[in-house]
Amino acid sequence: MGKPKKSNVANNKNDNLEKQITGAGKVAKHKNKDKFKLRAEESPNIDAKSSQKILAAARQQQLEMDEENFPSLAPRRNLRFNLKDGLDNEEEQEDVSEHEFMAELGMDDDDVAAFERFQQPPSKEGKRTLHLSEIIMQKIQEKGADIHTKISDEGSLKIEDLDPKVKEMYEGVRDVLKRYRSGKIPKAFKIIPKLRNWEQVLFITEPHNWSAAAMFQGTRIFCSVLSQAMAQRFYNLVLMPRIRDDLCEYKKLNMHLYNALKRALFKPAAFMKGIILPLLESGDCSLREAIIFGSVVARSSIPVLHSSACLLKICEMPYSGANSIFIRYFLDKRYALPYRVIDAAVFHFLRFENEKRDLPVLWHQSLLTFAQRYKNDISSEQKEALLQLLKKKSHFKITPDVRRELQAASCRDEEMMETTNELSHQPMRMYTDEDVGYVA
Image 1 (tube, rainbow, N blue to C red):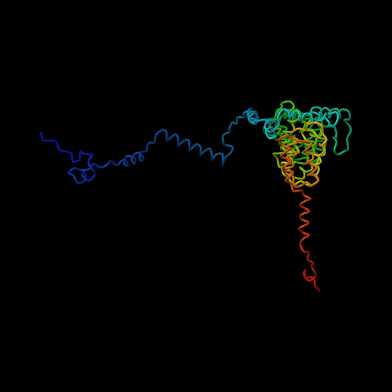
Image 2: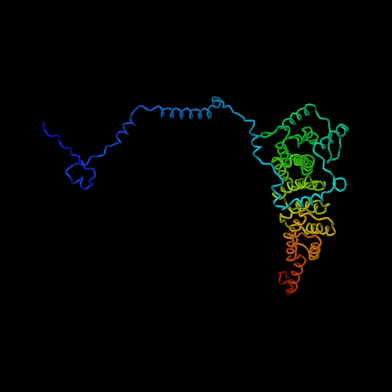
C-alpha cells in the first residue's frame, strides 16, 4: 500500500498570516453560512410558532375591519363593574384635620385654653347655629302648620303642594344620594336649582343624610346654577351645618366635604355671607372649625373687594378667638386694602387696651401680621396708639417684633407731607395761550 497523501491545508494554525500565505500549505476558507440561511428561508414549510402569530394578527385585523365597517357584526364585550371602586377611591383620599395647620399657628395647650375663654356664650352675645337635622325639622313643621300658604317674600320659603308622583320621584333620588360614592348624578337632582320652590324639593331629599360625595356634587351643581342670594341660602342652610356636624362627630373633615367647601368659593360673596360671617357671628366657633374653614380662605384666590368687605365685618363684630385666625389669614394675602379697612383693623386692636383677660397668642400673631404687612399704610396717630397698646398688652416673644416693625414704619400722612413739600419747592410756571397754541 502506498503512503497516505498529505493534506494541502496548513496544520499549524498558530502561525501568523504572512507565514500561512507564503508557506507551502493553503489556508482553509470559511464556510459560507449565508447559503444555509437562504435555503432555510426558501423552504415552503413554516414552524408552528410563526403560524400561530400570523393567524392571531389576521384575526385582529379582521375584527378591526368588522367594527369599522359592520358595527352590528362586532362581538359584544362583557363589561365588569367593581362596586368597591368608589369606596377604595374614597378611602385613598385622606381626611382633613386641624393638626395639619396647627404648626403654622404655633399654639400649645395654654393658648388653646385662652382661645376657649374668648368663645362667646350663645345665650348672651352669639346666636347658636342649629344643626342641619334641626333646620330640616323646622321646615317640616312650618309646612305642616301652613301647607296652603304661599309666602310672597322673595327671600323666604315658598310652600306649595307637590304632585305625589314628583314627591315619589325625589324620594327615590333621596335613596340614591344616601349611598352615592361616584358616577353620574340623577337628572332629576340636577334640575332642582332651576325650580321655583327648589328649597321645598331639596328638603325632600334630606340633605343631612347625603353621603359626603353627594354633598360635593350637590354643591358643585347649586353654586353654578343659583344666583348669589340663593347660593348664600344653600351654603347657610345646607353646606355649613353639614360640615360643622361632621367636624363635631368625627373630629376631622371628610375630603369630599373639604372639596365642596373650596368649590363654594365659586361665588365668593355668597361664601362670605353664607358661611364665614354666620360662623363667626354664632359665637361658638371652635378652634378646629376656625382652622379648617380658614385654611380654605388661605389656600384659595379670592377677589380683593370680597376679602376687604369680609375683613371689615370681622373687625367690627364682637370678638372671639376665631376672629383672629381669619384676620390673620386675610392679612397674609397682602392685598392693597382700602384705608377704611386698615382703620377698622387698627380700631379692632385698640379696643383691647383695657381688656383684663389675657389675650390668646392668636391675637398677638394677627397684630404682628398687620404690622408686617400694613405698617406703612397707617397714620402717625395710629402708630403712636399701637405703641401705647404694646405697653399694656404684650407677649414675651411676639411684642418685640411688633414694636420693631412699627418703629421702622413710614406713615402714610408723613409720606403725603413729604410729597407736598417737594412740590412746594419747585418753581411754578404760568402757561399762556401761546404755550398751548390757542392764539387767534
